Length: 64
Image (cartoon, rainbow, N blue to C red):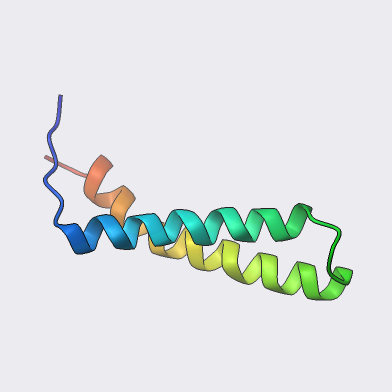
């Protein structure tokens, strides 16, 4: 099993990326906003969440 040590700021940043992904997905699925607004905001948050997840994924699944 691979052990990864994270600093407190990294854990906070990781949590923020999860929130951005979740809110983006939630906006895409919701019906409270106009379709154009919902799509633009949802896709932007989803893209930000995915883009900021990449460094964490590389650290976790990268080479030893």
